[in-house]
Image 1 (cartoon, helix red, strand yellow):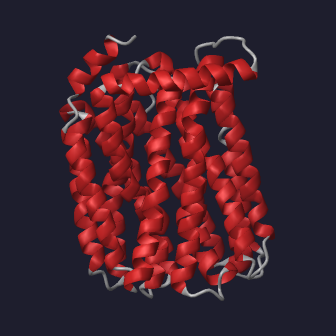
Image 2 (cartoon, one colour):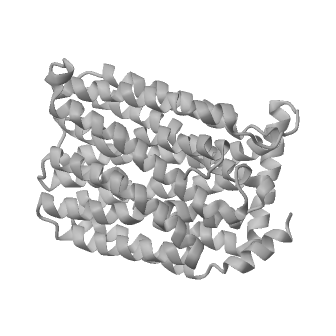
Image 3 (tube, rainbow, N blue to C red):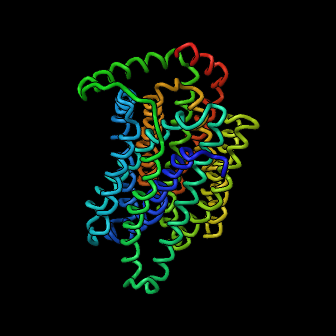
Length: 422
């Protein structure tokens, strides 16, 4: 880890920064607080539906914006500026969450939707900067390094936040509810503070000095060209389809796992501890997957992760105890960061470096477009069948279809096609 340059550390620390939101807010406290405090008067199925809808609508907005903004960012050389803009917005919306009163579930869902827009909107620009801090042969290791720091940073703050909720009196707080509110503030501060190194030390290729209107028009033209390129860059297109399908299932698990456990009657303290386990197991596991990508190729590493995830979903259908949830948390922690990091590094090999903002805008679009459907399909299936367990069949279909499209990706052919379009 110490061999990484200052720019690599600064870039990777943004994963450390934004993972506080992904872990404490998105996966941890918000689903619990939403169901048990803000939406306490709603039936479980309805609160699950509204949580899924907030996740899906935020993703839908990013779907609409990401490719165009990525093209504009390439034109201006403004990937970092767009990242900082979305981050600032997400930080502010997160900081407002503590002021929402009990029963005000609609306002809580709105702030969560807006904060998630800030979080999700920043990720495509963050991913696109990887081509400026390392060479292609370093993509697997650097991408894994970012995810490992994310798991560590998100896990450390989450552990502190859980401690506050378990022993609020130790921190001079009235109760666990006040501790959760304070946790949202700590996330906003953490996210803002650890974004600073990226803003200071990560450099990108300068863009063209053109007006916003001209940049937008150029972005639309470049976007249309990218669609045409994707017809020729068949391997890139196949990978995007594969990624769209399997990351939908992964994101749905991340966003809905706590809600699923609560619906099965598990204690929220047990669910939060399981999330902590996932975070800290993910730190070394993500680094190991970076090595796996270098040894056997990122595509084969992704296959391993998908096979494990499929087994976890089958397991979850018959889960009964908190011990089952803990065991699944360990298993997911072993592969989650690896799947994400190898997907990013494999995709970086299949795109033109000078259009990284635009192509990673597509990458972000595909993941968020997937997240439009996953949480809603799980929520709707649960409502229609009356069973949260039956809704997991959706995830099996997504993992299987993603693996099939991944089998169509010839990485070397994809790299040769890229060299013919640069």
